[in-house]
Image (cartoon, rainbow, N blue to C red; front, side, top):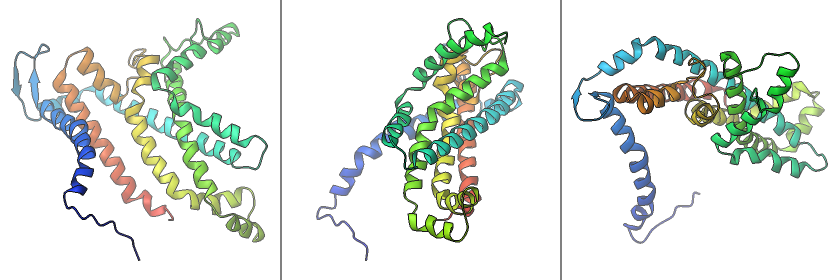
Length: 293
């Protein structure tokens, strides 16, 4: 038997939903509608004149070699961030789930980075890896390793991947730890009696039971890698050197805010939104089949 909330006043449920609906309308649907509208317009940088061009902005964007390069770069960057953040979060959660002294303190400290803003996280890593003032950056140069992420594109990409993944590790850690603690101890003990131990128990028992958590985190991390890493890239490298770290979300900002190509920037944002919707739909269509609830 399911419990249902019954309201005596028919208007009250709509009043309770109104604030959330208003926030969704103002901060999601309205900006999304404006982006779609501007993506079909071409206007001068000062906004004095505009004309309707239908899908010309999309055609130019998809033919632009710099945009295609940013697309490939984003795929590599996102895959690296997701793999590093999720594997690190899972590994830390497994270690924190053990019965060790001071585990509560470890859990609390591992959750702190999630509260750090992306720009602040970038500043922390800058003070560590900057070739002139960073502790590790100066140490690498002193040891004979030519480290300068401001000039070397591969080093810049490595740094933004590490910084972006570090920012997300705590989020993954929290959910993986909750998932591990929700697994009944009797299941683990029964698997141990049947001869499953160590890696075999992890892959055959623990991971299938963690599949709902893993699937949820995969969806969240894809959205994070595509959208929420802007602050890290902007503060650390500014998309450079030579567009080596210019992902799709940063290119939207660069073309729209810095270069004032408003139509092209709006078209890029719509394409990026469609990519995320497509990836999420594919995950729910195919990946969720392997999830055991």
